View (cartoon, rainbow, N blue to C red):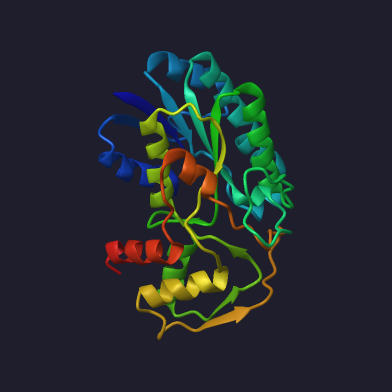
Length: 285
């Protein structure tokens, strides 16, 4: 039995991991929220790792409010950098393999072809910078690690683009959605499967990997697909705009190249539209 600790238990990715873990019988997954285990406190981490068997840790705990991070800079860095360093230190001491989830927002969006792991990060907002510096801190402390960058994460759980669009549709509010950014909407359930697949292989092919659903879309494309797949396209007042003002600047292009993770771990990425379609079907909307 492989013992897996998942931090950030209340978040959408951890919730998806709890669901998906049922299909991995060789993995014994434990889930801790911030109230149960705050990774900002090294002593609490030490106590937990001493008292519980842990072979792998998946860190889904993060500060993810992109606009708010511009105002709460210290808080963003405390969670996305300093706390990640704490976790890396304790994992090193206890010989635990760490999988850390990061973001496409470590890139500046100036490319026009998918970003590979070899491209140099250059974040353009506080959130992206805090996540990239968290990656760097982790790598300095724990040489043998997995960093998995993903993009535009959504699921049936919590607050995300999918749940927000479905809520807006029910309220029949007019919507203007931007076409300015191009990325890859990623179903958190698919990312959860990928992370547990990596662990189940017990691979030592450490490093940085990219994982998203296949293909690309603008936020307007994503919204339109949500309403079409949920049967709400006729009732929603949807319009596109080439610019939508936000407090934090966002990369205009952040599509990720998934070939490394697929080739290394013998997996395939599902097209984003198909994955969205299947999730909405399962939600019985």
